[in-house]
Amino acid sequence: MTTSPLFVPDPKLDLVLERVIDVPRDLVWAAWTQPEHIVKWFTPAPWQTTDCEIDLRPGGIFRTTMRSPEGRDFPNIGCFLEVVQQERLVFTDALLPGYRPSEKPFMTAIVALQPEGTGTRYTAIAIHRDEAARKQHEDMGFYDGWGKALDQLVAHVKTM
Image (cartoon, rainbow, N blue to C red; front, side, top):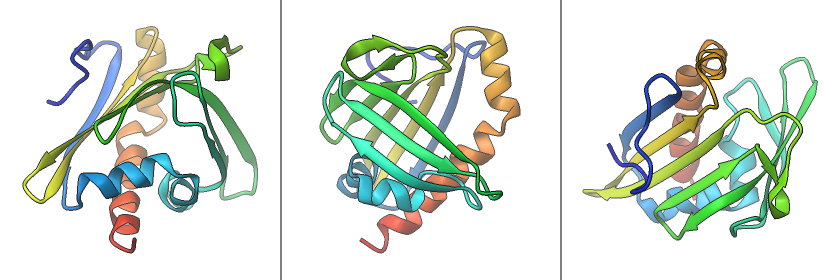
C-alpha cells in the first residue's frame, strides 16, 4: 500500500481505498487540484458537486458544495495540510483555511498517487478521530461512494 511516509493506517480508525487505475498520474493530479475538474467527478452520482474552491498550499482552502438528488446543498470546507506535487494531497475538515479550528471535524484525507506502468496506483485514506466516526463513515457508504467517485474521476480524465 502506498501511504504517507509518516502515516500508517490503523484499521480501527481509518478507511482505505486503493486501486490501480488506467490513467496517467499527471491527469489524476489535475483532476484533484483544479476546481473545473472537481465539479465533474468528485461526488458519486446521482449527487453532484456544484461548486469548488481550491488554494493549493498548506493552510489553503479546499471547499466543495455537494447537492443531493433532492436538491439540498451540503457545503464542506477545510484546508490542505500537505501538498506534494503529483504525489500526495492531505486535507482535513478539522481545520478551516489558515489552520483555524472547525466546529465539527469529521476526517482527514490522504490521497497518494504513484505511477504504475502507464497508469496510477491511487490510494485514498480517510482518517477518523475514533472508531465511532470510522464506523459512521463506513456505514455512510465510504467504499461504494469513494469507489464510484474514483470511477467518475477515471472516466472524466479520459476526456481531458
